[in-house]
Image (cartoon, rainbow, N blue to C red; front, side):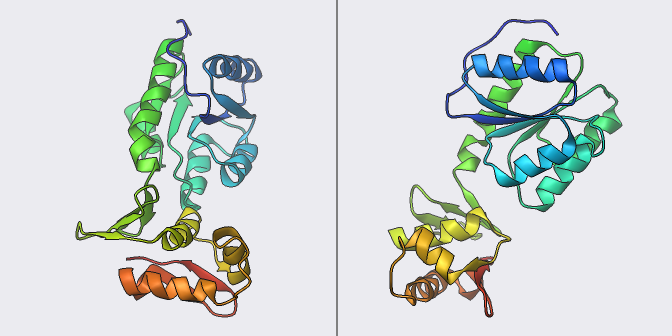
Length: 229
């Protein structure tokens, strides 16, 4: 692996590196750290899965040939849990079928070992650029929430403007789309612990009135989860 460091990445960018080769893993951690990234290193797939499910990342670099759980299986499991962090697969397998398997598992890019350091850095920067605008939007089934603009883009292309509190509630649901959120947790996270218990129900009503009854699902006896437009 030859090359010199390229342009530095933004200091706020956090990467998950899943690599079982100790020497290569620590070398890459040092490389990305020098570029301004914060890096978590997982030496095997199970640890990578745990980190990917519990911590926020801007991109993942995943070795395919991991012990126990390989990189393809790791990506499939993360995607099934609605983890959409863009991923680049590092692999010793360069056949077209292997690349297709990686992309079908949910990877955005694929790099064959041995690789050039400058190319790896450039691919990670490109991965972050391509996903920056999309990362600012949260999927709502076939529509999208833009938390910065307080708008929802409907599948028809129409845009609906939300109030600040409506947007915060919908964002809380959309960031963990499969989780059932209790009223108490939503009241604490979205409404700063407002004492009025009905505040969550009131804003769910407002969202349904603007976006349709299916946008928020009621889970009886528990709370709410994200639905679809």
